[in-house]
Each structure stands twice: as structure tokens, then as C-alpha cells.
Image 1 (cartoon, one colour):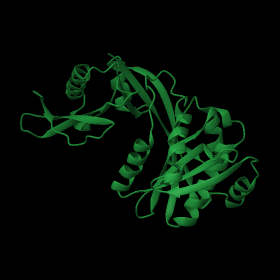
Image 2 (spheres, rainbow, N blue to C red):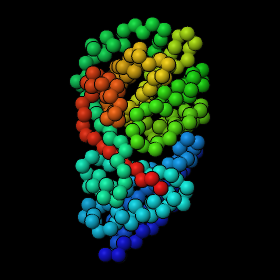
Image 3 (cartoon, rainbow, N blue to C red):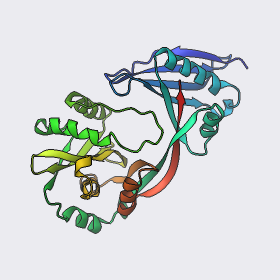
Image 4 (cartoon, helix red, strand yellow):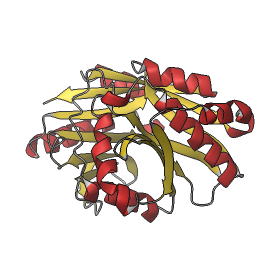
Length: 293
């Protein structure tokens, strides 16, 4: 069956990336699949593109995925990319497809969920109430307050050594404008961004942070974003302290919220142990593949 691949105009363009898109269709014009390529453009990641590819189950094994992949790879090369990464559920048809196409598995992630109805609030309060000499917790909603903006942007380097195994992920370079833009993007989607941070009392700088994005109506499941502690402040239990406060805040402020979602690299044993101790339950795994261009 002849397959037509049509490049689409995608308005999704930000200061950090732009996106290319393709639609696959059969001779009657019916869509059979699609592909999106996120091309990162900011310093530290301007070698990288991220692929999202979908083929209708009824159209698989007919060459649709292969042609969409070829189009995306050609575009990544034209954009001067060094690596293309893509993520699929472990054991899925996409997992088998990418492996057959010669992409290299570089990372495995475990997804977990904390059902808030089962959260041990007494244990969480005990964790939050434990003294951490030299540190205090602060929190805010949405965009970071002006007085903390500079130190919060600087604290983002806590994620630079996050375990990514063999992924050619690069380094996300943060400044105050990027921090504010990220918060604005969450608000533009109608979602709520809550941040808890640990502050070093000796100089009032942020030593670590954890972020939670809640649906705008306060229902369903919220999603953890970044959690990180600067290397010079590790070993004091700050990550668990901050995350426990974040969970308690979610329960208190969003009583209709069902659960909290987290995804963690299998090699990030420290964060996985924190999640396990806080009651997060594994739900599924995904794998990340990479094509080196």
C-alpha cells in the first residue's frame, strides 16, 4: 500500500526549541501515523532532538513507522543534530520497533504513583518536623519570587549530574528568564506549579528544590517535575524532607487530588529509595532509545 508522508507546519516554537511534524496517510487520505521531532536550540542541548512517533495499530508492519522515522532522521541531520532520543513503554510494539531499527537503548525509567488516600500523613509530618540544622524550608506557587529568583536559577545545576546512563542528554543551562518562562508555560496550560525549596541559612541561598505540577481543577493525578540537591549540600536528607513537605501540601491544598506521579531512572537508586520510603508504588517502566547521527 502506498504511503504518503506530509510535512506539517507546527506553531509550537519556544526560546528553547521548535518542533517539526509529519503525517502519514493511505491512498484515500486517511491518517495512519504521525511523527513529531522536538529540536532543542539552547546552549547545552543544541545537539539534540527528541522524537515522538505513533502508528495506528491497524497500520503497523506496513512500513508507516519506517517512513516516518526516515523523515524525522533526515530532518534531524538537516538541523545539524548529533543525537535523536525517543521514549517508549518497555515491552511495547514501539520498543520492538526501535530495537529492530538499530536504535540503542540508553536509559530505563520506572514510573511510580503515590495514592494520596494511602499516604501516611503522620509519618510525613514526622519527616517534615525533623530538624535539619542550618537549613529551612520555603515554598511558593507559580513563578519564583523575585528575591529568590537568582539563587533558584543557580540551584538548577543540582540536576546536571542526574543519572541519565548513556543518554546524550547534554546540560540544560538555566537563568532567571528560563526559570520564569518554565513557570509561565505551566500556567499557560492551566496547571498549577508548586515548589518547595531548602534554603541554606548561612547565606540564604537555595540548596535544593522539588517541583509538583497539579491539574488546574485540583483533581486526578499531579506530576512531580525536578527534585535536586546541590552536590555541596547532599547527605543531609534534604530531598526526602522537601518531598515530604510537598506531599503534605498537596493533600492539604488539593483535597480532591487522587495521586502523585513520579518517574525515576533505574540507576538513580537514591531517589528511588526515597520514593519507596514515602509510599510510591511502581506502575510501569519505559525505555529510552538513542540514534547517533
